[in-house]
Length: 137
Image 1 (cartoon, rainbow, N blue to C red):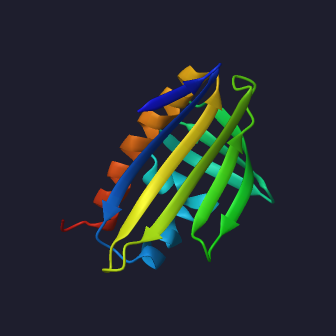
Image 2: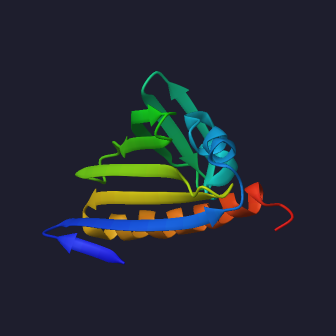
């Protein structure tokens, strides 16, 4: 579901993974590992609080890392490419209390259409993450 206020859009995707949250956090909480679980990203370089991801089309996408919190298992970043007026992405790995995790990926962007694009990609990335984390599932 896409929520739009003015020119800003917000979208959220989630997936339940049959693995403990610490295992999932090891992958999604490491800014240098995004290309392992997010289809369409082929590489990334992290330097301090800056990350540049490169898409399969060869387009570099600069980002600013905002939060990498292993206690809350929260990762936040901002795409700083000029095509976006504003952006914030948030990934939370929640402990479901039964040995499984809920991974929630939210994105807020201006223009709103890019929230829809990023949200669609995030949904695919979460499905891919589940396949990686549950190889026998």
